Length: 158
Image 1 (spheres, rainbow, N blue to C red):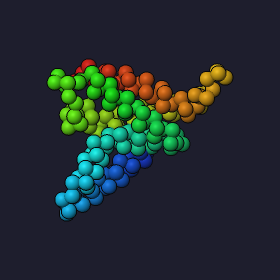
Image 2: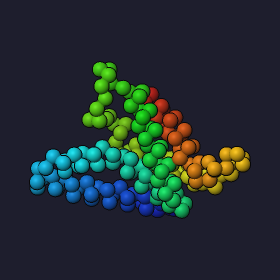
Image 3: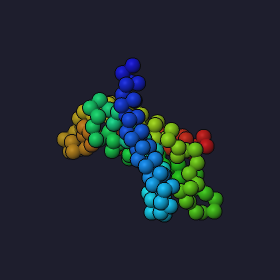
């Protein structure tokens, strides 16, 4: 039950982002301004990143900002791997060509991975010459490596 509670705490942040997205959608519908539509489209495009950060914060033991950074780094590495392995044949990539790999589910599983990795490695001790990268600073590093493998696995499936 504790896992579901932590997941629910993390899900609050993307829900707040959905409210903000809705406000910009209504503002665009009311005014028709292209600038507001651009903001709306940007928020929609980056929604999986927001989900990843929110879920990582919720799952982390102390709801640390380092877990949010790990969630962001994890999703960005994942997205870069997916894009590089599934590059369009005509050599042009545009954000509208995002496939199912970029839906909010990718944010959920990268957020879960970042949160779990944070809980496992937030207090790791490294040798003295690497001590700067120990503890909470180690979590985004290990999350990026794990995201590399998750991205390669998902790219191989799709």
